Length: 285
Image (tube, rainbow, N blue to C red; front, side):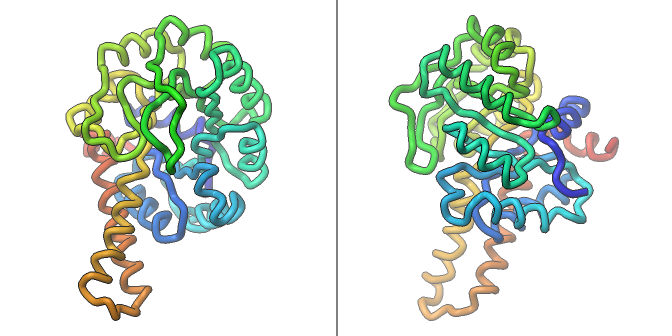
């Protein structure tokens, strides 16, 4: 099938009542683990990378790696720019072939956030999806965090979404970037944001949220949940355990294979957590 637009992922998930995982990659092992789990569950998915991670290889390498791996996959997968902070980030990802974009101008005042998001929309081809963020999500993403946290104001949502022209809205409702097992969503606030929004919602910081909250997000208009820390930890842990078991270990391919398996297990678990009724949805696909 090859890469599809983020709008296609959103459309299919909404029509089937599914929540798409959005899984961050940086390297081959992580990409292979993600796609293996996606093929197993048949749930449309976003594979994404943030500018802070793209510095390792460049956007073009990420695009080539992902597109090669999914060439024979029949599950819709979009390649998403996560936390693009500048319009240059957006341009670079689009130039490399990304099919979905996040413009994260949440660190700017409300009006500037709206204007930058709208400008990012103008840069994206009409068929590609744009995610914007309203409110400022706490915690750190790759050691970068906001100067101040702020929850999403439901009273600003309708005007912001209309002016920005976004297809998805990332919200701050108690979620925290990174692995934050203490984090809890304010579901009452999430409901008020849902009622005000004309587009589906996005939850960042999925790694630390409780299973019981992740399993009901489709009822709150959420179409996408970001997961990064869990995958990275699975890979680092695999290599760390191999070294601890044998400091003279030299078979990189064997340990890399175990890392792929570990990452696939984490991704599949997350997809099924987001979609507790997955069995019946897969049967209808």
